[in-house]
Image (cartoon, rainbow, N blue to C red):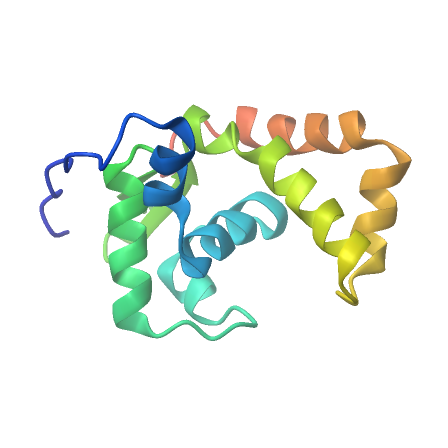
Length: 143
């Protein structure tokens, strides 16, 4: 696995700027979405996602998200050639943010995924509790 890059100096002390610097491209958010909602954990799963991210971009975004402490990686215990990725508590803290982004997009755009929107509208707190519970059972990325 490539060495972690050192943290870079932020452009400002603005919390929104810090968020944008960490998450401001579509691929990072989609990787987090795939982990959170679809349970993806391997490079191959992310690579085969509906949006078809290029492998070099995927490798870069996974490394960046790990450097920011949003995800963690470890060797797969059953296949040492694979890395298994998992959300950290910091990454899991994005669940309410992504949930609100889903609702916002559904309110203003025809997104086509009404089942997810209905599920969130029906019981947002329950939905978030399910997401948190799913990751509470994964104490280590290599599980």
